[in-house]
Image (tube, rainbow, N blue to C red):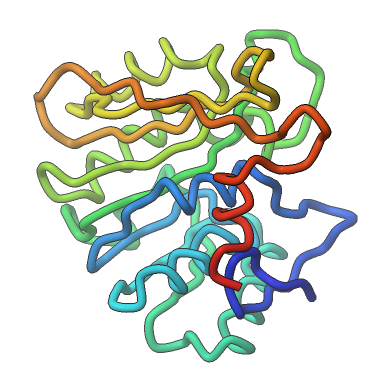
Amino acid sequence: MDQVSGTNFYIYQDKDDFSFGIDAVLLSDFTKAKKNHIDLCTGNGIVALRLAYLYKDASIVGADIDHKAIELFNKSISINKLDERVTAMEMDIREVEKHFKKNAFDSLSVNPPYLNPKDNIASGDYKRQELLLNLDDIARAASYLLKPYSKIYMVHRPARLVDIILNFKNHGINLRRLRAVKPFAEKKANMILLELEKSEKVGFDYMNELVVYKADGTYTEEVKEIYYGNE
């Protein structure tokens, strides 16, 4: 059991399987959760737990196909006494219609598998590679789940930006804000944070880049605030 960064909550996770990383923490900080929020590919619930801490009036559902991860997430919900407003759901995101009514949510976050199997990158892990769920599946689910003009928040890799824009546009969702994340100021971005909207509006704001580490390898002030500001 570990502390959820930036909160007084605790999280159960299996460090031999899949532990949360900085991408999940940055996504939860970037996300603006509304009254009814859903977190797809929730894993052990790190994003959902941080959002529950940051947005105390929000009801949050975390959904994932991984049985073991959802079991751990349920334990975290219980120990943090969040049963009344956080729900863990074991489900195939490709089958959202079986679980929810259309337009059921006001906002959505997702930390999806990053790797496209067509790129021939060896992984074999569905948490990292699009073996069970791809961008089109996520875009279709988001379009079904969200009310018009609601926002989707995502973390991904820069190399997939065109794929993201095209897949979501095919489902009536357009990019509204983009923030590049760089490990060091002089390095290329290795992550992107995206805000998309279920609307036909086009054009997006390119936000100031977020730098994670200073030259000495310690966190920048902004990242320190994201990680530890509320502890």
